[in-house]
Image (cartoon, rainbow over all chains, first blue to last red; front, side):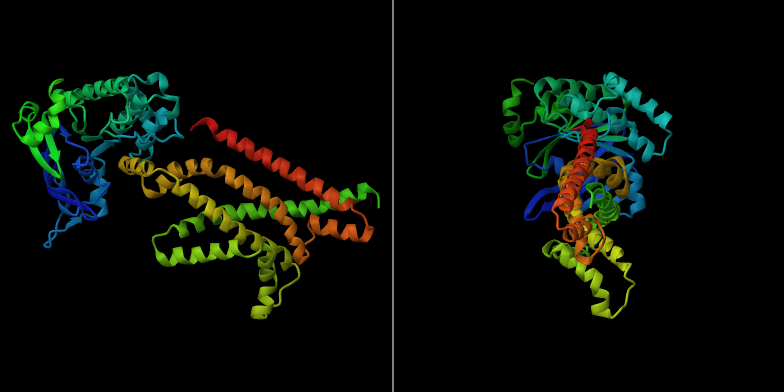
Length: 254
Length: 216
Protein backbone atom coordinates (compact mmCIF):
# COMPACT_ATOMS: atom_id res chain seq x y z
CA UNK A 1 0.00 0.00 0.00
CA UNK A 2 1.15 3.51 -0.74
CA UNK A 3 1.99 5.71 2.20
CA UNK A 4 0.94 8.81 0.36
CA UNK A 5 -1.19 9.18 -2.70
CA UNK A 6 -2.09 12.42 -4.42
CA UNK A 7 -4.25 12.42 -7.53
CA UNK A 8 -5.07 15.16 -10.01
CA UNK A 9 -4.13 17.91 -7.62
CA UNK A 10 -4.98 21.43 -8.71
CA UNK A 11 -4.15 24.63 -6.87
CA UNK A 12 -4.37 28.26 -7.86
CA UNK A 13 -3.44 31.47 -6.12
CA UNK A 14 -5.79 34.03 -7.62
CA UNK A 15 -5.39 33.79 -11.38
CA UNK A 16 -2.12 31.94 -11.14
CA UNK A 17 -2.51 28.21 -11.55
CA UNK A 18 0.39 26.75 -9.61
CA UNK A 19 -0.49 23.06 -9.74
CA UNK A 20 -2.27 22.01 -12.90
CA UNK A 21 -2.79 18.30 -12.55
CA UNK A 22 -0.35 16.52 -10.32
CA UNK A 23 -0.45 12.90 -9.27
CA UNK A 24 2.12 11.41 -6.95
CA UNK A 25 2.62 8.23 -5.01
CA UNK A 26 5.08 7.53 -2.26
CA UNK A 27 5.64 3.99 -1.05
CA UNK A 28 6.81 2.78 2.32
CA UNK A 29 10.42 3.82 2.87
CA UNK A 30 10.66 5.28 -0.61
CA UNK A 31 12.83 8.32 -1.25
CA UNK A 32 11.39 10.73 -3.76
CA UNK A 33 13.09 13.89 -4.95
CA UNK A 34 11.18 16.69 -6.60
CA UNK A 35 13.27 18.93 -8.81
CA UNK A 36 12.44 21.71 -11.20
CA UNK A 37 12.79 25.43 -11.80
CA UNK A 38 11.68 27.99 -9.24
CA UNK A 39 7.99 28.71 -9.48
CA UNK A 40 7.19 25.29 -10.90
CA UNK A 41 4.95 24.45 -7.93
CA UNK A 42 7.25 22.08 -6.01
CA UNK A 43 6.87 23.79 -2.67
CA UNK A 44 3.16 24.28 -3.16
CA UNK A 45 2.81 20.57 -3.82
CA UNK A 46 4.61 19.86 -0.54
CA UNK A 47 2.45 22.37 1.29
CA UNK A 48 -0.68 20.70 -0.08
CA UNK A 49 0.62 17.29 0.98
CA UNK A 50 1.32 18.56 4.50
CA UNK A 51 -2.00 20.42 4.75
CA UNK A 52 -0.39 23.83 5.11
CA UNK A 53 -2.39 24.69 1.99
CA UNK A 54 -5.70 23.32 0.86
CA UNK A 55 -5.82 22.11 -2.71
CA UNK A 56 -8.63 23.34 -4.95
CA UNK A 57 -9.23 19.95 -6.50
CA UNK A 58 -7.81 16.46 -6.23
CA UNK A 59 -7.45 13.52 -3.91
CA UNK A 60 -5.07 13.17 -0.98
CA UNK A 61 -4.64 9.96 0.93
CA UNK A 62 -2.27 8.75 3.65
CA UNK A 63 -2.23 4.95 3.80
CA UNK A 64 -5.97 4.15 3.83
CA UNK A 65 -7.13 7.46 5.28
CA UNK A 66 -8.64 9.73 2.67
CA UNK A 67 -7.84 13.29 3.69
CA UNK A 68 -9.47 15.01 0.74
CA UNK A 69 -11.34 14.04 -2.36
CA UNK A 70 -13.39 15.74 -5.03
CA UNK A 71 -17.09 16.37 -4.65
CA UNK A 72 -19.33 15.92 -7.73
CA UNK A 73 -18.42 19.47 -8.83
CA UNK A 74 -14.74 18.56 -8.86
CA UNK A 75 -13.86 20.62 -5.79
CA UNK A 76 -11.67 19.14 -3.08
CA UNK A 77 -13.51 18.43 0.16
CA UNK A 78 -11.50 17.72 3.28
CA UNK A 79 -12.16 15.06 5.88
CA UNK A 80 -13.27 15.82 9.43
CA UNK A 81 -10.88 17.09 12.08
CA UNK A 82 -10.39 13.70 13.66
CA UNK A 83 -9.14 12.13 10.44
CA UNK A 84 -6.90 15.10 9.77
CA UNK A 85 -5.47 14.99 13.26
CA UNK A 86 -4.75 11.31 12.79
CA UNK A 87 -2.94 11.65 9.47
CA UNK A 88 -0.96 14.63 10.72
CA UNK A 89 0.92 12.33 13.04
CA UNK A 90 2.07 10.33 10.02
CA UNK A 91 4.33 12.95 8.52
CA UNK A 92 6.87 15.61 9.37
CA UNK A 93 8.23 18.58 7.47
CA UNK A 94 11.63 20.22 7.43
CA UNK A 95 11.43 23.85 6.34
CA UNK A 96 13.79 25.87 4.22
CA UNK A 97 14.05 28.47 7.00
CA UNK A 98 14.31 25.81 9.78
CA UNK A 99 11.60 27.52 11.86
CA UNK A 100 13.03 26.40 15.17
CA UNK A 101 11.47 27.94 18.27
CA UNK A 102 14.06 30.55 19.31
CA UNK A 103 12.99 30.77 22.95
CA UNK A 104 13.63 27.07 23.61
CA UNK A 105 16.98 25.40 23.78
CA UNK A 106 17.92 22.68 21.32
CA UNK A 107 16.78 19.79 23.49
CA UNK A 108 13.42 21.38 24.24
CA UNK A 109 12.93 22.12 20.54
CA UNK A 110 13.32 18.41 19.87
CA UNK A 111 11.40 17.05 22.87
CA UNK A 112 8.56 19.48 23.55
CA UNK A 113 6.16 18.08 20.98
CA UNK A 114 6.98 14.55 22.08
CA UNK A 115 5.88 15.53 25.57
CA UNK A 116 3.02 17.92 24.86
CA UNK A 117 1.62 16.49 21.62
CA UNK A 118 2.42 12.79 21.82
CA UNK A 119 2.03 12.86 25.61
CA UNK A 120 5.08 10.76 26.30
CA UNK A 121 6.93 11.16 29.58
CA UNK A 122 9.70 13.71 29.86
CA UNK A 123 12.23 10.97 30.55
CA UNK A 124 11.23 9.06 27.45
CA UNK A 125 11.18 12.23 25.33
CA UNK A 126 14.63 13.22 26.50
CA UNK A 127 15.96 9.78 25.73
CA UNK A 128 14.57 10.02 22.19
CA UNK A 129 15.82 13.60 21.86
CA UNK A 130 19.32 12.88 23.05
CA UNK A 131 19.65 9.85 20.81
CA UNK A 132 18.62 11.91 17.81
CA UNK A 133 20.89 14.81 18.70
CA UNK A 134 23.72 12.34 19.05
CA UNK A 135 22.90 10.99 15.61
CA UNK A 136 22.94 14.55 14.25
CA UNK A 137 26.31 15.18 15.90
CA UNK A 138 24.79 17.84 18.12
CA UNK A 139 24.62 16.23 21.53
CA UNK A 140 27.04 18.81 22.93
CA UNK A 141 24.69 21.58 21.77
CA UNK A 142 21.64 20.30 23.64
CA UNK A 143 21.58 23.29 26.00
CA UNK A 144 22.30 25.89 23.33
CA UNK A 145 19.70 28.24 21.89
CA UNK A 146 19.06 28.27 18.15
CA UNK A 147 20.68 31.69 17.62
CA UNK A 148 23.95 30.26 18.92
CA UNK A 149 24.08 27.66 16.14
CA UNK A 150 25.10 27.85 12.50
CA UNK A 151 22.42 27.46 9.85
CA UNK A 152 23.53 23.90 9.18
CA UNK A 153 23.32 23.01 12.85
CA UNK A 154 19.90 24.63 13.11
CA UNK A 155 18.66 22.60 10.18
CA UNK A 156 19.99 19.42 11.78
CA UNK A 157 18.09 20.30 14.95
CA UNK A 158 14.99 20.82 12.81
CA UNK A 159 15.50 17.36 11.30
CA UNK A 160 15.88 15.86 14.77
CA UNK A 161 12.73 17.67 15.88
CA UNK A 162 10.79 16.15 12.99
CA UNK A 163 12.23 12.67 13.54
CA UNK A 164 11.45 12.73 17.26
CA UNK A 165 7.77 12.35 16.45
CA UNK A 166 8.54 9.18 14.55
CA UNK A 167 6.89 10.05 11.22
CA UNK A 168 6.30 7.54 8.45
CA UNK A 169 7.13 10.10 5.82
CA UNK A 170 9.34 13.13 6.14
CA UNK A 171 9.05 16.06 3.75
CA UNK A 172 11.92 18.43 3.06
CA UNK A 173 11.18 21.81 1.51
CA UNK A 174 14.48 22.93 -0.01
CA UNK A 175 16.32 22.06 3.19
CA UNK A 176 19.63 23.54 2.08
CA UNK A 177 18.53 26.59 0.11
CA UNK A 178 19.22 28.95 3.01
CA UNK A 179 22.73 27.54 3.56
CA UNK A 180 26.13 28.18 2.07
CA UNK A 181 27.86 25.27 0.23
CA UNK A 182 29.88 24.18 3.25
CA UNK A 183 26.82 23.94 5.49
CA UNK A 184 24.79 22.41 2.67
CA UNK A 185 27.20 19.49 2.62
CA UNK A 186 26.77 18.69 6.30
CA UNK A 187 22.97 18.79 6.06
CA UNK A 188 22.87 16.61 2.93
CA UNK A 189 25.14 14.12 4.65
CA UNK A 190 22.70 13.90 7.54
CA UNK A 191 19.73 13.43 5.23
CA UNK A 192 21.57 10.65 3.42
CA UNK A 193 22.26 8.97 6.74
CA UNK A 194 18.52 8.77 7.36
CA UNK A 195 18.20 6.18 4.62
CA UNK A 196 18.93 3.47 7.16
CA UNK A 197 15.86 4.48 9.18
CA UNK A 198 13.65 3.31 6.30
CA UNK A 199 11.23 6.15 6.59
CA UNK A 200 9.88 7.58 3.37
CA UNK A 201 11.27 10.95 2.35
CA UNK A 202 9.98 13.48 -0.14
CA UNK A 203 12.63 16.07 -0.86
CA UNK A 204 12.21 19.27 -2.83
CA UNK A 205 15.72 20.28 -3.74
CA UNK A 206 17.97 22.14 -6.12
CA UNK A 207 20.91 19.86 -5.26
CA UNK A 208 20.99 17.70 -8.38
CA UNK A 209 23.88 15.42 -7.47
CA UNK A 210 22.26 14.77 -4.11
CA UNK A 211 18.88 14.02 -5.69
CA UNK A 212 20.51 11.63 -8.13
CA UNK A 213 22.41 9.77 -5.41
CA UNK A 214 19.73 9.40 -2.79
CA UNK A 215 16.46 8.98 -4.66
CA UNK A 216 14.47 5.89 -5.51
CA UNK A 217 12.37 8.15 -7.68
CA UNK A 218 12.94 11.57 -9.15
CA UNK A 219 10.13 13.85 -10.24
CA UNK A 220 10.80 16.77 -12.53
CA UNK A 221 8.19 19.51 -12.35
CA UNK A 222 7.76 22.55 -14.53
CA UNK A 223 4.89 25.02 -14.80
CA UNK A 224 2.67 23.12 -12.43
CA UNK A 225 2.88 19.72 -14.08
CA UNK A 226 5.10 16.67 -13.76
CA UNK A 227 7.18 16.62 -16.91
CA UNK A 228 9.22 13.56 -16.18
CA UNK A 229 9.44 10.96 -13.47
CA UNK A 230 11.23 7.70 -12.88
CA UNK A 231 14.49 6.43 -11.49
CA UNK A 232 17.26 8.99 -11.10
CA UNK A 233 19.02 7.54 -14.09
CA UNK A 234 15.94 7.71 -16.30
CA UNK A 235 15.11 11.27 -15.37
CA UNK A 236 18.61 12.69 -15.55
CA UNK A 237 19.17 11.07 -18.93
CA UNK A 238 15.78 12.07 -20.26
CA UNK A 239 15.56 13.34 -23.82
CA UNK A 240 12.71 15.66 -22.87
CA UNK A 241 13.55 19.17 -24.08
CA UNK A 242 12.32 20.94 -20.95
CA UNK A 243 14.32 18.56 -18.79
CA UNK A 244 17.44 19.02 -20.86
CA UNK A 245 17.05 22.77 -20.71
CA UNK A 246 16.73 22.66 -16.94
CA UNK A 247 19.64 20.30 -16.45
CA UNK A 248 21.81 22.17 -18.95
CA UNK A 249 24.11 23.73 -16.47
CA UNK A 250 24.13 20.78 -14.11
CA UNK A 251 25.01 18.20 -16.78
CA UNK A 252 28.73 18.81 -16.57
CA UNK A 253 28.99 18.33 -12.85
CA UNK A 254 26.73 15.32 -12.62
CA UNK B 1 3.69 72.73 58.39
CA UNK B 2 7.05 70.96 58.75
CA UNK B 3 8.34 69.15 55.68
CA UNK B 4 8.24 65.83 57.48
CA UNK B 5 4.47 66.29 57.85
CA UNK B 6 4.16 67.10 54.14
CA UNK B 7 6.16 64.01 53.23
CA UNK B 8 4.03 61.87 55.49
CA UNK B 9 0.77 63.14 54.04
CA UNK B 10 1.99 62.79 50.47
CA UNK B 11 3.25 59.31 51.20
CA UNK B 12 -0.29 58.32 52.18
CA UNK B 13 -1.40 59.71 48.83
CA UNK B 14 1.36 57.81 47.11
CA UNK B 15 -0.02 54.56 48.47
CA UNK B 16 -3.34 55.35 46.79
CA UNK B 17 -1.50 56.16 43.54
CA UNK B 18 0.39 52.89 43.73
CA UNK B 19 -2.89 51.08 44.29
CA UNK B 20 -4.43 52.67 41.18
CA UNK B 21 -1.28 51.78 39.26
CA UNK B 22 -1.20 48.15 40.40
CA UNK B 23 -4.90 47.47 39.91
CA UNK B 24 -4.82 49.07 36.47
CA UNK B 25 -1.94 46.85 35.36
CA UNK B 26 -3.40 43.75 36.96
CA UNK B 27 -6.61 44.03 34.95
CA UNK B 28 -5.67 45.95 31.83
CA UNK B 29 -2.83 43.65 30.77
CA UNK B 30 -5.02 40.52 30.47
CA UNK B 31 -8.01 42.53 29.21
CA UNK B 32 -5.76 44.09 26.58
CA UNK B 33 -4.88 40.64 25.29
CA UNK B 34 -8.55 39.73 25.00
CA UNK B 35 -9.23 42.99 23.16
CA UNK B 36 -6.27 42.36 20.84
CA UNK B 37 -7.61 38.92 19.98
CA UNK B 38 -11.02 40.49 19.34
CA UNK B 39 -9.43 43.11 17.13
CA UNK B 40 -7.74 40.37 15.07
CA UNK B 41 -10.85 38.18 14.99
CA UNK B 42 -12.07 36.93 11.63
CA UNK B 43 -15.59 37.70 12.83
CA UNK B 44 -16.19 41.18 11.45
CA UNK B 45 -18.71 42.12 14.15
CA UNK B 46 -16.22 41.38 16.93
CA UNK B 47 -13.31 43.04 15.17
CA UNK B 48 -15.51 46.02 14.29
CA UNK B 49 -16.70 46.56 17.86
CA UNK B 50 -13.19 46.28 19.32
CA UNK B 51 -11.87 48.62 16.65
CA UNK B 52 -14.42 51.30 17.62
CA UNK B 53 -13.70 50.73 21.31
CA UNK B 54 -9.95 51.17 20.83
CA UNK B 55 -10.51 54.20 18.66
CA UNK B 56 -12.68 55.92 21.30
CA UNK B 57 -10.33 55.07 24.16
CA UNK B 58 -7.35 56.42 22.30
CA UNK B 59 -9.18 59.32 20.70
CA UNK B 60 -10.64 60.99 23.79
CA UNK B 61 -8.96 62.32 26.96
CA UNK B 62 -8.58 59.94 29.86
CA UNK B 63 -9.86 62.67 32.15
CA UNK B 64 -13.09 62.88 30.18
CA UNK B 65 -13.40 59.09 30.32
CA UNK B 66 -13.05 59.22 34.09
CA UNK B 67 -15.85 61.78 34.26
CA UNK B 68 -18.09 59.62 32.10
CA UNK B 69 -17.44 56.54 34.23
CA UNK B 70 -17.97 58.45 37.48
CA UNK B 71 -20.91 60.70 36.60
CA UNK B 72 -22.35 58.64 33.75
CA UNK B 73 -24.43 56.27 35.87
CA UNK B 74 -26.21 59.23 37.48
CA UNK B 75 -26.63 61.52 34.47
CA UNK B 76 -27.42 58.83 31.97
CA UNK B 77 -29.36 56.27 33.99
CA UNK B 78 -30.24 58.20 37.14
CA UNK B 79 -28.47 55.61 39.26
CA UNK B 80 -27.35 57.07 42.58
CA UNK B 81 -24.06 55.56 43.67
CA UNK B 82 -22.32 55.75 46.98
CA UNK B 83 -19.44 58.31 47.01
CA UNK B 84 -17.03 55.43 47.57
CA UNK B 85 -17.78 54.60 43.93
CA UNK B 86 -15.11 57.22 43.22
CA UNK B 87 -12.28 54.71 43.63
CA UNK B 88 -14.09 52.09 41.62
CA UNK B 89 -14.69 54.65 38.87
CA UNK B 90 -10.98 55.40 38.72
CA UNK B 91 -10.12 51.72 38.45
CA UNK B 92 -12.70 51.12 35.75
CA UNK B 93 -11.70 54.22 33.80
CA UNK B 94 -8.00 53.40 33.90
CA UNK B 95 -8.44 49.72 33.13
CA UNK B 96 -10.62 50.21 30.05
CA UNK B 97 -8.37 53.00 28.80
CA UNK B 98 -5.09 51.16 29.27
CA UNK B 99 -6.51 47.89 27.94
CA UNK B 100 -7.03 49.67 24.61
CA UNK B 101 -3.43 50.82 24.45
CA UNK B 102 -2.10 47.43 25.53
CA UNK B 103 -4.33 45.75 22.96
CA UNK B 104 -2.64 47.64 20.17
CA UNK B 105 0.78 46.75 21.56
CA UNK B 106 -0.16 43.07 21.75
CA UNK B 107 -1.56 43.20 18.25
CA UNK B 108 1.60 44.71 16.78
CA UNK B 109 3.65 42.04 18.57
CA UNK B 110 1.48 39.15 17.52
CA UNK B 111 1.34 40.31 13.92
CA UNK B 112 5.11 40.69 13.78
CA UNK B 113 5.58 36.96 14.41
CA UNK B 114 6.85 35.09 11.35
CA UNK B 115 4.28 32.75 9.84
CA UNK B 116 6.90 29.97 9.93
CA UNK B 117 6.47 29.70 13.70
CA UNK B 118 2.79 28.91 13.29
CA UNK B 119 3.47 26.49 10.44
CA UNK B 120 6.15 24.62 12.36
CA UNK B 121 3.80 24.34 15.35
CA UNK B 122 1.00 23.09 13.13
CA UNK B 123 3.19 20.45 11.49
CA UNK B 124 4.38 19.24 14.90
CA UNK B 125 0.76 18.78 15.95
CA UNK B 126 0.36 21.51 18.56
CA UNK B 127 -3.21 22.71 18.89
CA UNK B 128 -4.10 26.39 18.58
CA UNK B 129 -4.10 27.08 22.32
CA UNK B 130 -0.71 25.41 22.83
CA UNK B 131 0.72 27.24 19.86
CA UNK B 132 -0.48 30.59 21.13
CA UNK B 133 0.50 30.27 24.76
CA UNK B 134 3.69 28.26 24.61
CA UNK B 135 5.19 29.28 21.27
CA UNK B 136 3.80 32.62 20.14
CA UNK B 137 3.14 34.59 23.35
CA UNK B 138 6.54 34.11 25.03
CA UNK B 139 8.19 35.54 21.93
CA UNK B 140 5.61 38.32 21.65
CA UNK B 141 6.28 39.39 25.24
CA UNK B 142 9.96 39.81 24.48
CA UNK B 143 9.16 41.85 21.40
CA UNK B 144 6.67 44.19 23.05
CA UNK B 145 8.40 44.75 26.37
CA UNK B 146 9.96 48.12 25.41
CA UNK B 147 6.57 49.48 24.29
CA UNK B 148 4.93 48.14 27.43
CA UNK B 149 7.56 49.88 29.54
CA UNK B 150 6.66 53.18 27.88
CA UNK B 151 3.00 52.66 28.64
CA UNK B 152 3.66 51.66 32.24
CA UNK B 153 5.76 54.77 32.86
CA UNK B 154 3.00 56.92 31.40
CA UNK B 155 0.55 55.16 33.70
CA UNK B 156 2.54 56.18 36.79
CA UNK B 157 2.11 59.81 35.81
CA UNK B 158 -1.47 59.35 34.62
CA UNK B 159 -2.59 58.21 38.05
CA UNK B 160 -2.56 61.91 38.91
CA UNK B 161 -5.63 62.30 36.67
CA UNK B 162 -7.66 60.67 39.43
CA UNK B 163 -7.45 64.19 40.86
CA UNK B 164 -10.21 65.14 38.42
CA UNK B 165 -12.79 63.14 40.35
CA UNK B 166 -11.29 63.98 43.73
CA UNK B 167 -9.76 60.65 44.63
CA UNK B 168 -7.27 61.30 47.41
CA UNK B 169 -4.17 60.14 45.59
CA UNK B 170 -0.85 61.90 45.78
CA UNK B 171 -1.45 64.67 43.28
CA UNK B 172 -4.82 65.59 44.82
CA UNK B 173 -3.16 65.84 48.20
CA UNK B 174 -0.22 67.82 46.90
CA UNK B 175 -2.55 70.30 45.25
CA UNK B 176 -4.61 70.68 48.44
CA UNK B 177 -1.55 71.08 50.64
CA UNK B 178 -0.01 73.56 48.26
CA UNK B 179 -3.16 75.71 48.44
CA UNK B 180 -3.61 75.53 52.18
CA UNK B 181 0.06 76.14 52.94
CA UNK B 182 0.56 78.57 50.05
CA UNK B 183 3.75 76.73 49.24
CA UNK B 184 5.38 75.03 46.30
CA UNK B 185 7.00 72.43 48.54
CA UNK B 186 4.20 69.83 48.44
CA UNK B 187 4.23 69.89 44.62
CA UNK B 188 8.00 69.50 44.53
CA UNK B 189 7.90 66.63 46.99
CA UNK B 190 5.17 64.97 44.90
CA UNK B 191 7.35 65.43 41.84
CA UNK B 192 10.23 63.69 43.58
CA UNK B 193 7.93 60.82 44.59
CA UNK B 194 6.69 60.39 41.01
CA UNK B 195 10.24 60.43 39.75
CA UNK B 196 11.42 57.81 42.22
CA UNK B 197 8.36 55.67 41.50
CA UNK B 198 9.16 55.75 37.80
CA UNK B 199 12.82 55.19 38.41
CA UNK B 200 11.96 51.93 40.17
CA UNK B 201 9.50 50.96 37.43
CA UNK B 202 12.10 51.61 34.73
CA UNK B 203 14.68 49.64 36.67
CA UNK B 204 12.38 46.63 37.05
CA UNK B 205 11.34 46.69 33.40
CA UNK B 206 14.98 46.87 32.39
CA UNK B 207 15.65 43.82 34.56
CA UNK B 208 12.80 42.00 32.85
CA UNK B 209 14.16 42.87 29.42
CA UNK B 210 17.61 41.62 30.38
CA UNK B 211 16.06 38.44 31.68
CA UNK B 212 14.58 37.77 28.25
CA UNK B 213 17.91 38.40 26.58
CA UNK B 214 18.84 34.75 26.79
CA UNK B 215 17.68 34.21 23.21
CA UNK B 216 17.39 36.21 20.03
